[in-house]
Structures are given as structure tokens and as C-alpha cells.
Length: 337
Figure 1 (tube, rainbow, N blue to C red):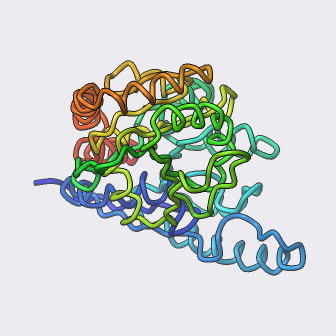
Figure 2: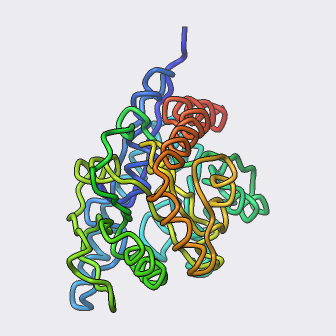
């Protein structure tokens, strides 16, 4: 008989990607493994509001709410943090006496204040790292294990491709500058294939310098729209510069494309290189690289179809939540012992 395990996960908010994709989507697998996990998202958000007038009352309410949450989590067998409970501060965490795990899917130490993230890692029994770059940093503080950000392959699955070629980019408005960096390449691809269009799924519309607005399809983001928008595309985009911050990215955008059987073109930095090598995606550095790969995948749809099959296989075998959720359960049990 499986011994029940009680776990609590403190997240930065209900809609924060790390809460959705590194905690909440694993609940079914955790339950199968006998782990009862309660998520406690920050009621007022873990990040200060832009208005300076609102920051002081926000800080008072958030500190009180997070301190109470931490103090009442001591009955749990293990507690998971994803960073400081209150941005740039490290106070409520010390009220939690249960064994702790730190879960990290970004290079968050680059924005830490007074080494607070590293201190939180040093107090943890285990740091779960989204990729090897993150693991290399936190291995200096404590024991680490690599747990990629999983993809629910029952949700992200192949669909019917649009009749007209579609190049898709999906992400938050914070990532739009990365898309703008390949605008010249996109213009070249759209010029070479007049029937193609660019689809942008985002919480804010893109503002390109020169792309023809009639060739751009903007879809306001929602979980349901995002999946359908990717499923019907011909090729997906994941551009980004090579910086210490982007090397911490866990390639989740590209993995969702591949899970839907959609081939991808991506910048070959950080974890992206590993996913590209796994099949279904092309690396692109120069503007010509991007244009050539996009035009090839549109003009030779059979190549894209075969790549989509290989990409889907890679995700199912290595990044599916069905497998990673059980790995997470094992890591939590180990840390609680």
C-alpha cells in the first residue's frame, strides 16, 4: 500500500506559468502516486504593483497573508517553494519548519536581491531544476535533480493543419521583443510565400516596424485558444538572444509545438539545443537561417509532417506530464524522508 504524503506548494499566483505547468498540471499523477498536494497561490500576487502608492499596502497585506500560509503549512510532510514568497524579500519562508524543496524553471538567481534565492536553495533539501544550466548553478548550494517542464500530451496533441500556411508564435507580451528581432527574416519568408501568414497568440497585440498588418493574425491568449492556434499551424517559432537569462529557459514553447506535431524553428541556445537535437526542430542564428528554414518547411510540407512526427515522439518519450508527474512524486517523497 502506498503511504500517503501531504505536500504544500507555494506559488506566485493562479495564472503564473510556473504554477500552471510545474505544479497544477501534475496533480493527477501526484494523486496516483499517493501525494496529496495543496497549492497555495499568493492571494495578492508575489510581485509589487507598478503604482508606488499601492506598494506599501500591498506589502503589508502580502507579508501577512504569506506569513500565515507558511506558519500553517508545518503539518505537511514536504513544502515546495518556487522562489521567495514575497518578491525580493525572504521572511515568511523562515516560519515554515517542514522539509522544503525549491522548484526553479528560470535563471532567477540573476535577479535576486542580497542572495535571497541562493539562501532559500541552501535551506532546501532538494532543488528541482528545469534544465542543466539551472542545475549547474544550484549544485553549489545543495542537492539538485533535473525535472523538465512537462507537456500534457493529451491536451497538446496533433490537429488539422490550416489550408493556408501559418507560422505561429505563442507567448506573453514580455517575449515579443524576441519575436521583433527576427522581423526581417519573417518579412523574407512572407515575401517568398505570398499565401502564408504569421499568427501571434499573446496577451497583447504585436507592434511590428514593417510587416504588412494584413499578413498578421493576432489571437488574444487563452489556454483554449492557444492550443487550437498551435495545432493548426504549419511551423512554430521560438527566437531568443543568447544571454545568461535566456539560457535558463526550459524550451516549453517549442515543446508545445512539437507535442502538436508542428515542426519548430528556434534559436539554438541553452536547452533549445538539446530539444533541436532530439528531432522535429531546426536551429537558426542568422536572418537567412530563419528565412530559409521557414520557406523550406512551407514549400515542402511532407518534410514538416515527418518532422512533426519526430517532434511529437520526442515529447511523449521525454517531456510528457504522465511520466514527469510520477518523477516529481518520487522527488517529494525523497525530500520528505
